Every structure is written in C-alpha cells, then in structure tokens.
Length: 314
Image (cartoon, rainbow, N blue to C red; front, side):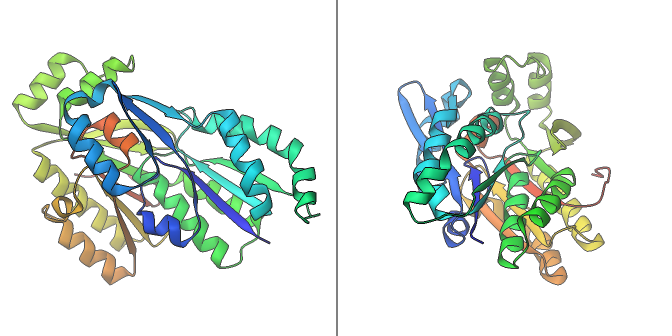
C-alpha cells in the first residue's frame, strides 16, 4: 500500500527531511503590507523575508492557509493517484483554520476520487485521514517524524492512526520568544488581549522571558526566567533531563527564528546534543517556519518532544 504524508508549512522540520521522505506541504501565504511570501519551507527565502519585513512589521502580518478548494484540488489532481492512503497532519485546530479546511475538503475528495483513480488505472479505494497534532511548530514535527518511521516499518494505516492519535496527546512543544513587545502587538493584531502593555513593558525592563508550552491543543506560559540565554539554557537542560528519563519516540525537534548557528551557540545546546547522542535520540533542526515567526517574533527558540505526562521544572 502506498501511504502518503501531508503536513502544513507551520511544521518545523528541515526541508531535506520533507524532500527525502516525499512529504507534501500545504503552504501558508504570509502578507506584510505589500510583501507576500508563500511558505514552502525554503529556509533561505524565509530568512531573507524575515530580515526585510518581520522585525519591524511582522505583527501586522496576515496569514492565509490553503482554502478548502485548494486542498481539494491538490488531492484530486495529484495525491489520489500517487497514494492509496494519506495522513494529513495539521497544526492544532485551536490555533489555525488549516485542520477544519482539510477536514471539509476530505468529504469532497472521498466523494470525487473514484473516476480520477480509475482513469489512471487504479481500481482500489482511496482513504484519507486528517489528524490534529494538537500542537504547533516544533511540536508538530514530532508527529511527522513518527509517521515516516511507521510507514517505513510497514505499519498498517489503522496501526498508524492509533499510534499517531496517542502520540499527539503526549507531545509537548516548548517555545521562548525574545521580544514581549512584539508578542503583545501580534496578540492585539489578532484580537488576543492576553499580553498587556504593562506586562510587556515590565517583562522587557526586567528582561523576563516566558517559557510557553503547547500540549493537547492548549498553549500557555509555564515559567518566567530572566534573560533569553538563561531561559534557553534552562529549557535545553530540562529537555536533556527528559531525554535521559526516556521519551516516547527517539526524537527531539529544534527550531529557531533565525540562523541556526545562533541557536547552536546558546548555552546548554551542546549538553542537550550530548544527551541525545548518549540515548540514541535523533535531533532535527530547522529554521522556524515563517508562520511561527510572524506569530512569536524573530529569534524565538522552539523544542518539541513526546514524553509521559510531566510538569515543567525550570
């Protein structure tokens, strides 16, 4: 059986991983005034766009995911002929319209695929499963890596669905933004008043950085630490501790809102890589998606992994 995997462009994994494993990307278009970039996970294009537009005006960005019709057309024109069963892994439906659009498109796809497949010489049925990863950015990457592993090991679609559903509920995505003013302005642009001016000003004055956690569809601050470098070190150390205790998949996903050399120079990074090497855990590093950067700001750090239930300890 030919199994396809689809993700949206908010999923933080390196482009060569997508290319190597034939993962299809649902792009998100980002518009800042007159500048537009369709995010296809091209790291060079993302960094150029960030340098020119995001730092000063990123909070004004408008993001446009693939519509129901665009998703339908992609599947009917390409995927129903290339695959027999497709898993579409999306960013948390609490944070984006992508999941609902894909789900709506799936009804039309399953109603219309038969003559298209028959014309291509495929008489077997086609199946599509839209799964909410319950996470975002680096957290999404954990599910995509596991989907590839399961497919490569020959898992059946029902077994893959059961495993990916279970994994989504146990995946944690942590993030540290650099600029609270940017985060406040972006939240206000989107109508979210949770980051107040006084709180942003106080946090900036004291160089306080929140540690945000995405888990089971909920994104919330779980710690406040002084200074981005200290906060990053604490998050790296915490992740290394979870790696040594045992993850649910041998995967850690790192993403950074800028050049990866900057992330690799942060305190605690080398120790985390050492812990992963010791435990046989693969580390996937990528420039953060443009969707992530316009929402949390340039220079943010993201880490995703799957682990038993735990409370963050920083």
